[in-house]
Length: 195
Image (cartoon, rainbow, N blue to C red; front, side, top):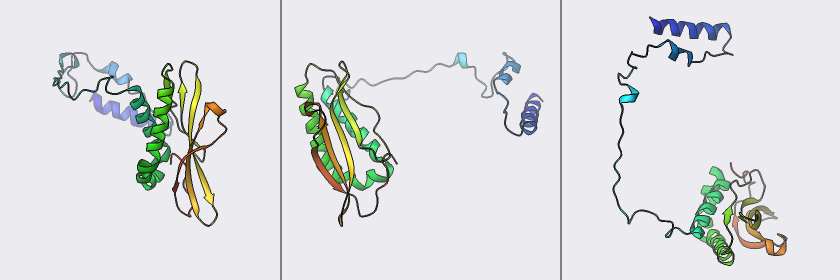
C-alpha cells in the first residue's frame, strides 16, 4: 500500500508542476521502518567483503622500474591521443607512432637528462578547436615551461592539409620552431582537435 501511495504522490507532483519539479527521493527513506529488511532481504551492516590478492612480485610495477622519464613519456602519449580525438586519431595513429612519437620521446628524454635537479611535469589539458598546444613540459618548483609541444594544421597549395608537429624551448624564449615531422591528412579540411 505504501508503495502505491508513493508512486501516486510522485506522479501527481510531476503532473501538477508540469515536470519542472521532481520530488526528492530522500524523503521516502524517512518513511521506511528501520526494522524492515530492504528489498534484497539483506542488511548492509551484516555484509562482509574480502579480497585475496596473489603475491607476484615479478608482475608488480615498482617506482624503480617505472622511472620519472617513462612516466612523462607515457603521459605525453595519452595527452597526444586525447588531442587527436576519435576522428583524427585512427587516421594518423600508425604514422604518428612510427615517425613522430619516437622523436618526441627523444626530446623528452634529453630534457629529463638535462634537468636532473628539477621536478618536471606535463600540463594536463591539450587545447581544442584549431589551437596548436598538445602539452608542455614544465618545472613544478619554478612553475616555468621548459618545452612546448605543438601541432599546427597547414594547408599547402595543391598538396592538401598536413599536420606539422614541432616544439619550442625556453632556451630561445619559445620563438623558434624545432620541427619533429609532418603527417599528411588529405585535401579535405580536417576536423577540429578533441573531436
